Image: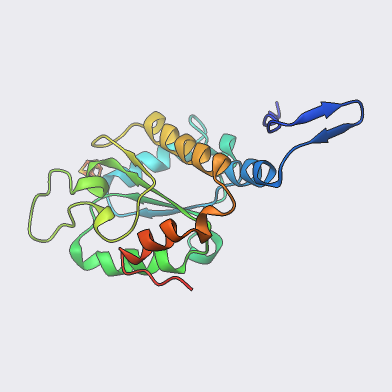
Length: 180
Ligand code: SF4
């Protein structure tokens, strides 16, 4: 059965429906997020289960995975990130076009997890901004799906002006990310 997403809020009458551009674009973005899976260890296996037929991330319009940053708008970081891997992750983030969102999946990506050692990055938010954190070691597929749904909520309700705001630019600059 094909499930249609709900129309955004608007004014409806006989033969017409009016809403704002923000809401239409938000609806389209939220239901066609293209994830880039940056999976380095066990949390990545949970992601594989999330993509499988039982959980089926395709139900949310996100079955099209991208291993090219330029064709992705949701960076999903899943697994332990060694400090040596940090610059690679940052480069992947830099290469993604705006608008883009970041989902940190599991304890390792979010905080280093159990690996409180000299070689492991203690949370990816030390190098890139994160929109949603999914707790767990590992999180179950249901939790990963909930994280994706939170990102959908952000995408659906984001103002078109947000990415051009001084506040957003300052946030990127705090991560030494160039804004043009
Ligand atoms: S959070 Fe747990 S399951 Fe996920 S990558 Fe780290 S050790 Fe593995």
